[in-house]
Image 1 (cartoon, one colour):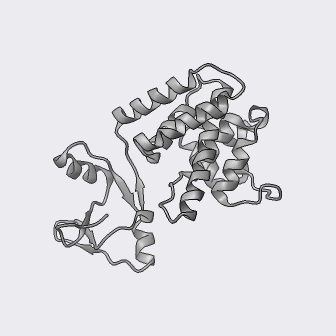
Image 2 (cartoon, rainbow, N blue to C red):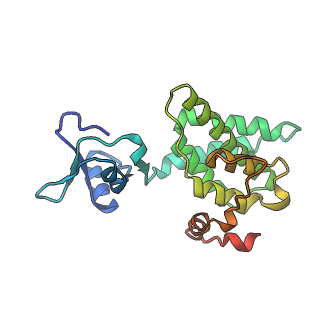
Length: 220
């Protein structure tokens, strides 16, 4: 985020204020700025007399999308569902997950990721369809690694939500391809064969799932 014609980037204290300010210029999308992290890393913040927080710029690593356009999400979810409904054959998981990940070019990864979360929370999908969604996350982590190696901007992942929802849907005998462990290892840079990480013992993952009304430890 850059100030462009202004001297500083203008920041609001809460989502409500940010939404109100953004509504002056059309339909708002709110981003959270990790100001505390920025301050620890040497960034300076100032507060104007009318309560607006100011800073010179905000690098992308300190930004997280907080709200989404529901109409846009409905469109991406509809397109994912259409791909999931394609005829099943021996390569169905691979083919459909590739097609779904291609939607990242059309909608952006942040929007596609949110659409995938909505579908992982949908109880009406079949186990095989959840496997397709899991492979999309694996493709995304592989792509992000390649982009980093090429000096390009990496994809941003909501790691705790991804891991929690995948284990919620595919733990035990519903993950014949070992997809979720591949995703976990890619997200946390773990040794595939020797790591003893368990999301059921990860308080951050467990607490994140509680926000969705899911008791992950009961799913073991």
